Image 1 (cartoon, helix red, strand yellow):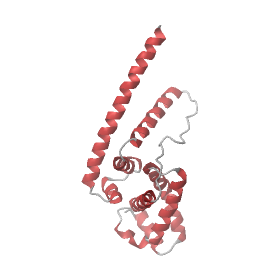
Image 2 (image 1 turned 60 degrees about the horizontal axis):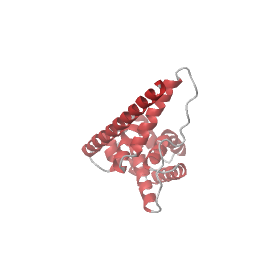
Image 3 (image 1 turned 135 degrees about the horizontal axis):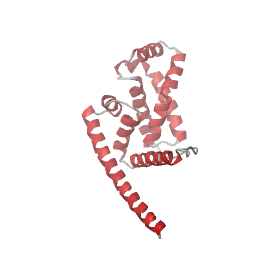
Image 4 (image 1 turned 45 degrees about the horizontal axis):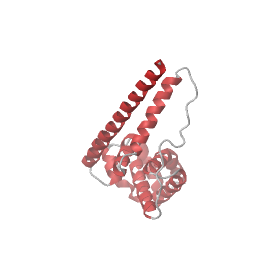
Length: 195
């Protein structure tokens, strides 16, 4: 935990309400995004984010053992999500929901291809089995270290590394198969255009 985080923790443990606002401001995007990646829709992710902060506030004195504020909050968010899942079933949402197309620009074709690649990657990640999807989301989308991912998921860092390896192998296969499919489609399109 860095000096800034330690100062924020000190302020939180001493009842500073402004520190609570700072905590939410600094970590809301990570908590909300992680909940969405786990499969919560926008409304549920917002509700669970609020539950996460309420639970964090009530357990702030237990924070000293955490690796970082973010990993601690994501652990609470994860627990809130899985408690909710055990109640009624939560429908998974696509990572592409709500993505708006980019504005036309001089490099519109390159921008469109980059966006399509990003969408394909997010769709491929969404297709992973839940434990692999969560591991990828924490490490690559939330920028947590292997140790921090392990803390959030309650597993050793070696297990995290193994899951990431497995997930990357699956993603590589899916994306390569998709690229081969697109190449075949482009070749057929080029042949049809030349007629």
